[in-house]
Length: 93
Image (cartoon, rainbow, N blue to C red; front, side):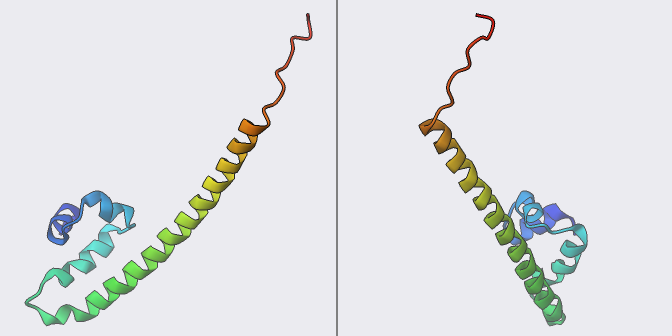
């Protein structure tokens, strides 16, 4: 199954699947979870659950890091707005 087919079957965009960090190998293993008539897919679906949990942890860590950077940038910008540096004068004049 291709990523576009998985996206259509799962109701999400291909971009969402890629932003979730799913690789082609992961997607191939998850296709069995979409087969509702075959109960042999239960272990694969449990693997999918674990995969999504791990990816969610990674995404949350990335969000926390980005939130920290955002806070520092906002603080620096506020400092610059409140305490502008004096303009430099031309030393030749």
